Amino acid sequence: MLNWNNLLTALAETAATTGTTDAAAAQSGGMISTIIMLVVMVAIFYFLLIRPQRKKDKKVKEMLSALKAGDRICTIGGIYGTIVSLKDDTVTLAVGSAKNQMVMARWAIRSVEDAPVENDAEPQV
Image (cartoon, rainbow, N blue to C red; front, side):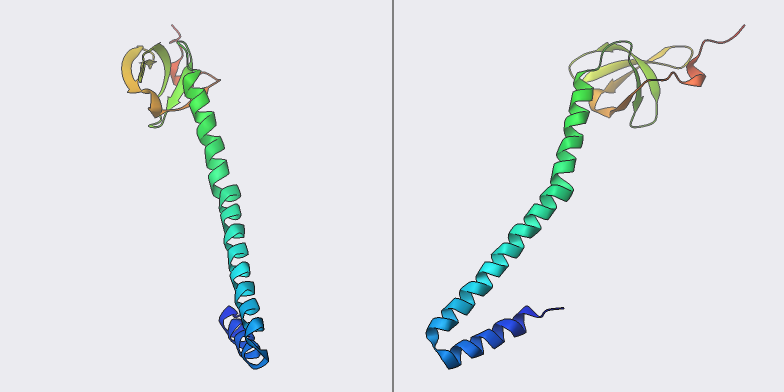
């Protein structure tokens, strides 16, 4: 691996023997490479961490704003239910075959389910 400290020291020694103009150029070259490395690191963090998280947050926000009564959902606690009513920050769910009602926070909804849950079906008589 390249040791930047040794490289800069060697450049500074070479510049000292050739004159002061080359020393200033060597220092500015080291500064430019440092700035370029920082810009590259910020770009990598943006494309690998920040951008995907923003996309995920946007999808979750769209899903929560599109909820309607009758949707089948799964909460972050693993409870499956059907939305009975919606208010600003709360959701009333019908849970289980007895259709017990629970009030949950809207942010606690993980996903909207397409398929019905087997345990929630009407009992066969």
